[in-house]
Length: 196
Image (tube, rainbow, N blue to C red; front, side):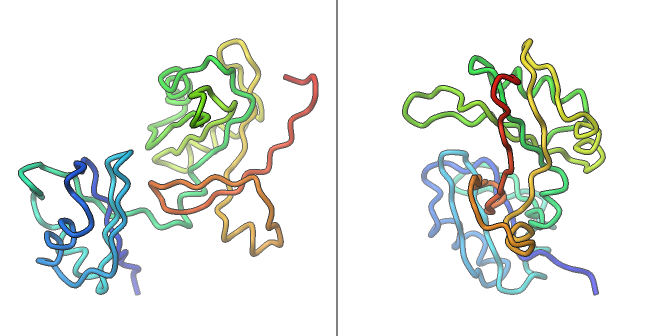
């Protein structure tokens, strides 16, 4: 029996599109279990009670909510994300998201690339994450543990979803919550003094 995902990702939402508005729109396709909205990144997740109703919503040519066209697509199952997502540690503090993404695009098509910044100072925290469309691209990056980025040696590691880490007995930070995929990722990264 094939798995049918009951969760949809809605891209391009506006600040007026709260949970109530999204429920009203998607209830036309079937009963909604819950809605989560992230205004800061203009993304929402809508989960149907019946997964087949999510498929019906996906068949709609376009979705217009409050006069604005939004992109609706199936959410990726959490288990497959970890195979395509990598952690990059030891980043130069001056690196921009564009430089970061530009370097890793050489290995394959990217779904998301983000340098993590301190919320108060807005400076890079020295690490980031890259999610590829294909697992093969992530594996290509991981063939080499270290890469040269802006004349600085950075380390790459596979990101392991939380459920896999807990199952193997690891229950400690550091971890990273990804609102796009609505899951926690644990990262095991040990800096070597003087190595960078």
